[in-house]
Image (cartoon, rainbow over all chains, first blue to last red; front, side, top):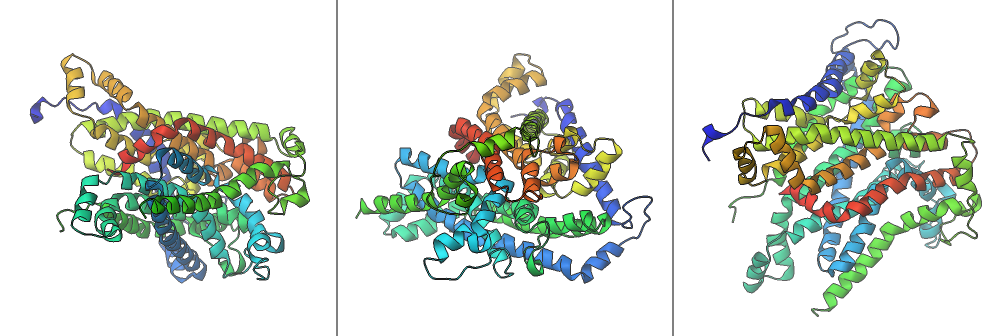
Length: 294
Length: 271
């Protein structure tokens, strides 16, 4: 255990990673910050404009729509996928191992489908009058065809449904791994002291699941902030009707490549970074196992 | 009562699992269907199995799809190999050694998780443009190599190994490089899991290859499918579904191969 006997750290083994990081992350980051402080010239020299893009963002209703939509999308995904995944995980935990591994495979499949493919598949599900959702589920219930991709109230629902289909299975497997790791003795003790099944679940399993819930939340949150394919394919590289499907990555992409305003696009992206950092910090702090709290 | 619960849970699970599996099954059968059939949810099975859509996609009549699949394969494999070669040694140093500035360096590496390549895509584009890499597979591959996720994962993996193992190797006179390679053999399941996850993430990537690729011959499969959807071809849904099925095969096949190791990797990441 003596510290002095520790060998010298092999710095050489760190070098490749950090050289690569400098090349594909540090340099682009610095360039990005500079880009956000310069004028929007697509070609030729651009000049320093300071915080003008950021000031403009504060007044841009479109940027605020995108930020709000993204936050709403992230929150709704978390609130739907995690409880649903928890229910599934509890069911998985009770299955015989052979059935469980089959179910697990089926549940992971959606997460393996490339997001572009998922979006194309959902074009057919959501496509207006001919969409499968309208034909198979709503027509028999005598609900008229809903315009999932045009109605501003339904566009967020379409995006959410995609996320639910994509992630619930994977989340349930992560949570099932967490449930399996709960020591049986704790549960037996709680039951012996007269706790009901539900109370044992709430007071024993749930607190021990926190790190697993946090991991899933972080995954879903980061996915919401980098989501591009779904909205890009379903809504044709726009925000959809009254920008109801405009998310941050889509906003930056459109600002940069449709309007040729790289500086504004970069400022919009960087302006959201503190919020993302804060949210991730809170999520990970929630995941720290609670110690000695009863 | 004790037997009823598992039965009910099992039944509920079958219902939910089929809800999740149905679109997937439907996708699998879609490329064999005629265009009018594609817009019907049921029957699930096509009237007759026709390979026309696969043929029209793979003979390069509309887009060079075989080339684009090969691009995807090359980008994802090379990027995964590079990410492994960079992250595993760095994770070993962070997980097994103490040194000054460790926390700061680690934090810098982790920032890559928070600010991923998708966020930095605009400056990446102008940087790679300056280097003359625009519209090459290199430009699509490089942005994902310094994986923050990989750094965190391998640091956790190496930190959990018992201290006796490397100490024993060092006592026998092994160099640090040698010790690293020995430990790498011990954590092989973690290596496989990381390679799998990174390959899938890279295979799925849409924004970076969309921005970096200019010509059809440089596009990856997802980008090619998205642009085929936006193209002027009327109702290319049969083609799209054929391409979609092909684009699902590598991740699904890989998962089938590593599925046993996947669970232990999850536990590594959380506890």
